[in-house]
Amino acid sequence: MITEQERVANAKKLADFCIQCAEDKKAEDPVLIKLPETSGVADYFVVVTANSEPHLLALSHHIERQVRDVFQLRVISGEEGNPGGWVLLDFNDVIVHLMLPEIREKYQLEHLWGKSK
Image (cartoon, rainbow, N blue to C red; front, side, top):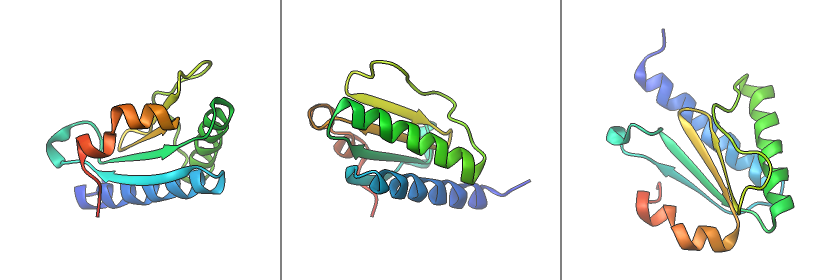
């Protein structure tokens, strides 16, 4: 059994890894958001911008595959097909938001949840 501190540290490693995977595929403006402990949603949000729908799907598939290979985790919830400018990958403690610029601007998750230091 792992401690809460270890679980959160593992979530941070996963979040950092997701950012690196996104950057490897030319995602823009990656942001890591540490959620409040009371959120009940996850420990971290990762928010990145894709430059087109095909780029969005390529990022999604790349991150899913890399996380599965390295962390042996599968996405709990994700989206296939026509993402409408926003793909969400839920890895339980880390939720990755892949967005087109106009969607990211519209919803401004960084302002809603606060940027991590």
